[in-house]
Amino acid sequence: MTNERGDWRRKDRVIGYGRQTIEAVDREAVASVLKSDWLTQGPGVPEFEAALCHATGAEHAIALSSGTAALHLALLALDIGPGDRVVTSANTFLASATSALMCGAEAEFVDIDPRDGNLDVALLEQRLETGPPVAAVVAVYFAGAACDLAALLVLKQRFGFRLVIDACHALGGTTSLDGEARRVGELTGVDAVTLSFHPVKHVTTGEGGAILCADQKLAERTRRLREHGLCRGGADRPFADSSTTPPWFASASELGFNYRLNDLQAALGTSQLERLDSFVAARKRIAARYNAELVGCEKPAQSPGHAWHLYVVHVESESRDERMAWLREGGIGTQLHYYPVPLQPLFRDAPHADADPERTFAKAVAHARGAISLPIYPSLSDEDVERVIAAFADWAN
Ligand SMILES: Cc1ncc(COP(=O)(O)O)c(C=O)c1O
Image 1 (cartoon, rainbow, N blue to C red):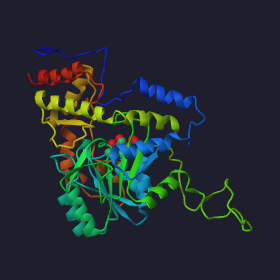
Image 2: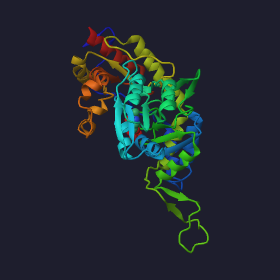
Image 3: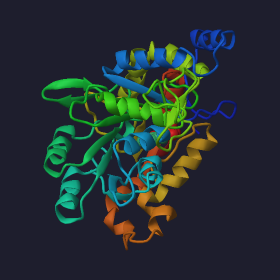
Image 4: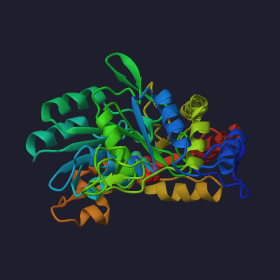
């Protein structure tokens, strides 16, 4: 169907809700690694880590094979383990919770504040006051909107938990703290911040992630855990009768993993990071256009430091699935972020699970029933933004 904006349907070109932006400089950066001596464990990773520190203001950046690996190692290096409880938002990607299970800890959830889709800090406070001790909180910046960090830091001080910010949606955004707009590496008082470089994120390495932190010991430990727990250049000796530590020797004193990012990925990441500001600016322009011109849906709340990883609207829950299918038929791909994690069988059917998660997490459920993530990424053309706006106008008519 057409309306005054024209026909928005395109069978020949389906757009997704997110997509990488790869240009000639990125291809050249990766090609030059292919011609070099190092495909992995070379100079590319420290270079990427330095670029991450520069872009985010972080003291230390540890590049890893995924955002999931970053969450796992952040919790592990903060000594989260069996018997511990980790609380996160009901509205997030699975890994914000499964990373606790990977450490042998239990995951718990709190419901969301529907205004921004982030965990409701008042509900977290209630949980901390009334339930067993919480070892860590993983606070997610949903869609790119910062949590109420000042309030979280007050709770951290009062209850003594570790605080990890899952900023996988928020690279390039800022948080208001002590009257300043802080980048994701400048969140004083937070133990660790995690990032993902999946292709739909602000910058990509294909697959990849990172931990940002201020504590040198934490940085050193996560670097060891990233590489099998191996320590090079330490004081350990290889044999009982060794008088020195030879250069070939590395000692493993705790269980680690292979969570390395390789040099091809790191080169792509470094090249992409140079355009982070323009990528975020492009996302902001698209969000501003949707805010001004979309009809027939509830639009997301605005906040000054929003990184606009996702643009999530809400429609009537009864017609949501039909509307997503209708958009899809016209060549506009959308997605749901997120089906509430505590409703996943992994958590719903676990021992000590909440007896009625649909009621306990009613706001995350209401969000999931009506939410649609619309296309937003730097290379989305004005014409395609126009198509999305026209499709909503068409539905509303
Ligand atoms: C909020 C959040 N946390 C963690 C992750 C995990 O990141 P990755 O896919 O790089 O493992 C994602 C990725 O989608 C995410 O959106």
